[in-house]
Every structure is written in structure tokens, then in C-alpha cells.
Image (tube, rainbow, N blue to C red; front, side):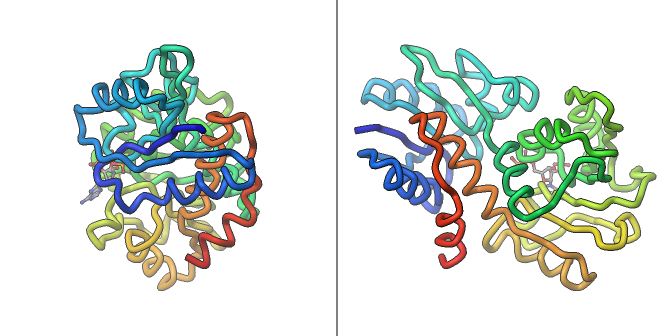
Length: 269
Ligand code: ATR
């Protein structure tokens, strides 16, 4: 029996338990995967209890990704750069932190046939979600990578933290964007949860630009509408959710799940 969990607040509606149970079925693994409520500041205690109960690994969701990165004993490069962890693996008596969000996003972009290498990419938002995916996107070698955010300083600092050879990387506020022709838009703000969209100017986009919203479900609705009204092709973040979970499952168990059937099942609800 493998004991895994997802910690967060709120966590009741997390899709992670269903995803990991589907992967466990493929791997013929006996899995106990729970969603555990944990508020900001309470993760150290929750992890100690979980480890004492035999927990082998866990996923972290809002608002615990930065706290998890700080608490871990070891960090992957993706965590060191982004400061955000979505996966903790118990290794002896230590926690190793990883972030599979970026690799999950890139895997989903591949699945959808959206190539960011050599393209002009606009990342909207500079919070934990944007930080988590930016290193993996930068590693694909876009021709330009621009982080735009309400708080310009946060975008500038995030852009400065990402090491990317041969990538023109910039951060700015919406008013200071001073750039256009973006071919791929990655929407990583939390505005959709309030029924809002970021103040994007369609003039910044190249003809035929494609958008990917890291949100899904109701939080994706406002941006989906914004894109539809402007003829911009747009995808939600359900596929990224599946792919990041599959990569986390592989970290936990060594088994790499096949994601195709799970994507189909998620679309069916
Ligand atoms: P997450 O982990 O989901 O990224 P976060 O770290 O709180 O959450 O970041 C939320 C993102 O949505 C940030 O980019 C935030 O912009 P600021 O850095 O300026 O706060 C953005 N966001 C949230 N509410 C917003 C609003 N009303 N207008 C514009 N951007 C907003």
C-alpha cells in the first residue's frame, strides 16, 4: 500500500485524488490517496503527521507551494528557480521538493501541438502559478519570453530570477509592455476566480496567436469568453493538470502512467 495525499486550502474539490487513483489502476498499485485540508503556516506539522503515518509523497496546491519549497530538505532545479513546489517525495527521513507544473504544461502544449520554441511567448501573471511554469517554458527556447503583471516589480523580479540562455526575457506591468507580436499567450493570473480577465490589448497579439489558460472549470470561463470574442484559439488547463499529476505519480512510484485515456476521462467529467 502506498500512502499519498494532496494538501491545500481549499482542497475538497481537488481532482488530484481521482487522477492518482486512475494512474494507480494502470500500475496495479494499492493506493491510499487523500485530500487533506491544510492552511498556510500549518504545513510543517501536517507533513510530520503524514510522514509518521507512513506517507510516501504528497502534492501541494494553493496556498502551500511556496511554503513547501521552503520546508523541503532538498529541492529540484525547478523548485530552486521558481520558489514553488507541487510535489514532495519522502526519501528516508527527508522531503525532496519538485515542481512538475512546468513540465506538465510543456507536455500538454506538446500534446496540443503548440510549440513555444522559437516563438514569441507572453506569460500573463507573476504569482506562484507563473513562477512554477516559467523555467520549463524558458528551457524550450522561445524567441521572446515576456512576463506581464499588474505589479510590475513582481514581473521584473521573476524574469530576472529565471536563467535562460539565448532567450530574450523581460518583465513589466501591463502599461509598460512596449512589445507586440506575441504568438503564444500563457494566462497564469488568478483573476478568473473573480470572474475577471487581465487587461490584455489584442494589438499585442500576432495574427493566429494561441492562448493557454492555466485555469480550468469556472475560473477559465472569463478568459475563454475574452478569447472567443476576439477569435483567439484558447485551451484550458485541464490537460496540464493531468500531465503534472502523471509526472508526480512517476516521482512517487517510478511508474510512468499513460495519460491519453485520462485526458479523455477528464473531458467527459
Ligand atoms: P497563484 O499561486 O495562483 O499564481 P498568486 O501568487 O496570488 O496566486 O498570484 C496571482 C496572480 O494573479 C498575480 O499575477 C496577481 O497579480 P499581482 O502580482 O499584481 O498581485 C494576479 N492578480 C490577482 N488579482 C488581480 C487583479 N485584480 N488584477 C490583476 N492581476 C491580478
